[in-house]
Image (cartoon, rainbow, N blue to C red; front, side):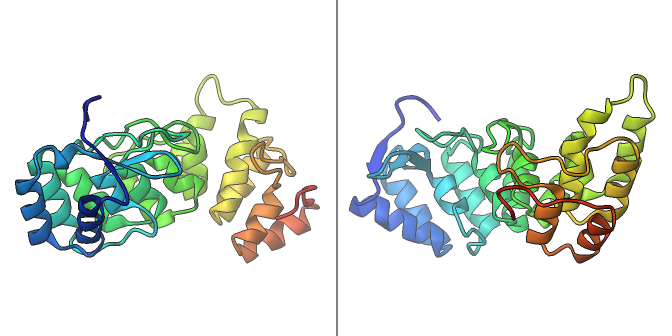
Length: 248
């Protein structure tokens, strides 16, 4: 997406028409609009309250799961849409693939990756990282697993949330091994993801049972309760885990 991309207000007739075509999965109408309007494929639709979205962002936006994902993505890509363009004027730099990940939209993830989107593109609102961070951070487990299947690189906290024990054990058995204080965040994520065996392993290696997440104040017990991970909750309570001041 170039700096001189066409701008449309979200309340303009063309913006409303193309948004409706995207959300309804109307491939033929989208194709006609793209053919008739130069620069539309690479345009930014601006909201009155601030921030702008590309057409792919509009298609991937919450709640996601719009129809005809593969055909829509292919049509936009063929017309010149930038698959990896970041959102404009927002606190993050998320691409449409980040948004598909945040919506657990596996079909759209596949469509974008098949069209050439970058699985490692930075910009997540979670940590500034790739789409996998958005999927894991927002608890979108099907999306997270599909991204890993499609080649996404994993960090320890991703692996803990997904229960990827072989990868975790390799890290902890390497030299130098992660320090115990580096295991508390992954432990928290294991509890979030319902990965009881992983949580037990990380606690045994020095993770903090009551580590409060800096972004929310939630402890592992808080997040396990919020995610309805009953087996993890029962085990944490048995171990004497506490709730945070902010609760779940």
